[in-house]
Amino acid sequence: MWRKLCPDARLSKGICLSVVSPEMPCTSSRWCWALSYPAPPVAWCSHASVLSQSLVLLSWTYMKLAAECQSAGYPGTLIPYKCDLSNEEEILSMFSAIKTLHQGVDVCINNAGLARPEPLLSGRTEGWRTMIDVNVMAVSICTREAYQSMKERNIDDGHIININSMNGHSVVPQSVVHFYSATKYAVTALTEGLRQELREAKTHIRATCISPGLVETGFAFKLHDNDPERAAATYESIRCLKAEDMANAVIYVLSAPPHVQIGDIQMRPTEQIS
Image 1 (cartoon, rainbow, N blue to C red):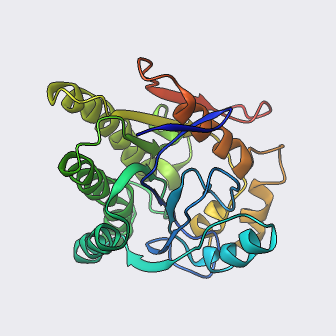
Image 2: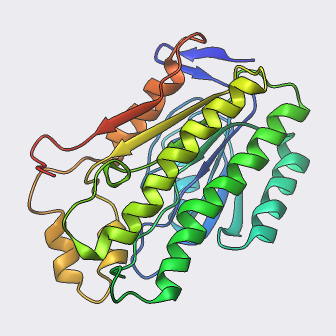
């Protein structure tokens, strides 16, 4: 099923589903757009890359991506599909549409995530629940549906990649991200649990975490939505990772030969301390 469409990546004939959250600070990170892009890896915009012959991306910002890819001369068509990742019915509807239009999913990249400034001692339950719904439940539902899509089509070389965080490996002394860190620790456990279950299922489908430190996106603007100056300062203190760095990590994971299981890539800016 996998083909060498370029020197540095294994690429599938089927759908690559990249579940990403919007980078525009005025939108909610639980709302997404899915776009399918039948082309080799050619672009990464705001935390998503075109990684296979048919790729599905999710975000408001990707309404512009179709025109950008077309103007750059890349082949393929971007098809938007709106999905609220906090709503299981909408997630299931999205997977049903992908099955109808594109047969199914071969690669799933769970990248949607958000943090709300809700400390453990004084945080609002609503904010905690939002983080659980998007960072944990949506990842689990999309993973389950992607696996079932692969299984029913006898895809044995698929891949599920969870975009985690360094906060899923260490707790920093910042109260506003403690609950967020808990959800990312959950992603760490979910990915290893998934790897074990895939082995028990006697499949060669692989599971990988990519855990970045500070990446220059709209993440801080969502976390500090009432203090845009503080959010902007987050990305001005050091030279942050870029979306392209994340894309390269994803391509590296997909480039691994079939007998290599990459469990977790931990990456942070060289200047980052925590």
